[in-house]
Length: 494
Image 1 (tube, one colour):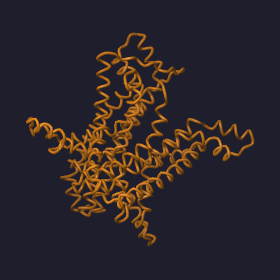
Image 2 (cartoon, rainbow, N blue to C red; image 1 turned 45 degrees about the vertical axis):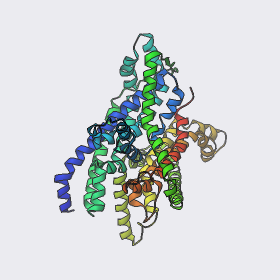
Image 3 (cartoon, rainbow, N blue to C red; image 1 turned 120 degrees about the horizontal axis):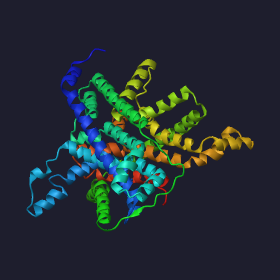
Image 4 (tube, rainbow, N blue to C red; image 1 turned 30 degrees about the vertical axis):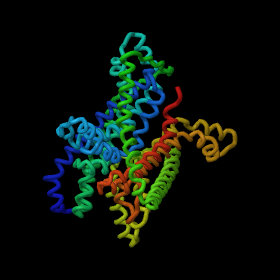
């Protein structure tokens, strides 16, 4: 394929800039979210302090806030008409240069405060299950909390920590709404502009290929780091007795969590609720109802499809221990590692090719969007179901067969009820990601088909942030409702 003039310009001018910017954004977001997530997990697991039960629950909820919505709120909050600058002006205390923060820094903070739960969830789960013996022993030997964290907890939980960090990296690479609003030049923006503004599908496809290479490099590094991470599990798992904090340390830790939760949860919700009350009369409620229906319909169809496919593939791979089953498993997981903008390019290219081959209008209707979303998030649902199958094993089914039942009877009557928590987690996580999804939906939706996410994006693009509040709140509230089963399953009572 001969490279176009546009591609020559991209290589010489655009590519170096977007590559460095993307890597800095990913690296900075991983670093900050990693520090927030792992420290929060360690504090919640090892210390007893005021409001701990509420705090450990609330720390999950920023995952329900799409980064692009948080970006709208944060830029307004620190902007000229926002609360900070307005308050300072009212007291005649104001220096404009105080708020000349770079878009890159704001983007890092947005991603860190909305994505740190990925690190928090994986690290906290590991520490609660396996660290009791080691931490208790270290305490009896006189080790301080700082030494226990850096010398014991962090090294042993490194695999879970790395897994959460990689999820953050994949989310940042796949984001479009945040970076385009903040005007941070990344691969996602370059792909969209090549595709739509310049009408150069070839350049968009080439950029997608480079972004895929970056993703695969990250996954290879993750695999290498996990292979070289020690996984020493105690023979007898002992519950960890949390240390009661008092005095200054207690106040400092509670203050840390209050500030974190205000920034990550309170700030966006308070602004959105305030804006929603101001714009109630300006919202076209019939259109909102249609967008809500489209969002729920799309989310339910895609999520049910993924859970069914994940169940079938998970059952197949556990029964057929062969190279082919391993390949099927890896292919299933591949889609989740591909950014939404790249997935949109690949799906559209495939559907256009098939339409020309068979003379069919395959690019019309919802089919292409549903297919793209299923491929994109199949790995997320499959991972949870596969983990459920690994936990229950085959012994329950084998016992049922000795009692005269068939394999399928044992599967549906005994094993499916045991997989309930895995199904709920898979369903909730996939549904939340689907209703928040922006790049795929923007590019593969039928003409004039709006979801809550695309409507929020359109309002923001028209500089109508206040009107974006009600659909934004709808996305967040729906996500929180569906996130609850996940919290219950991973956050068992003490």
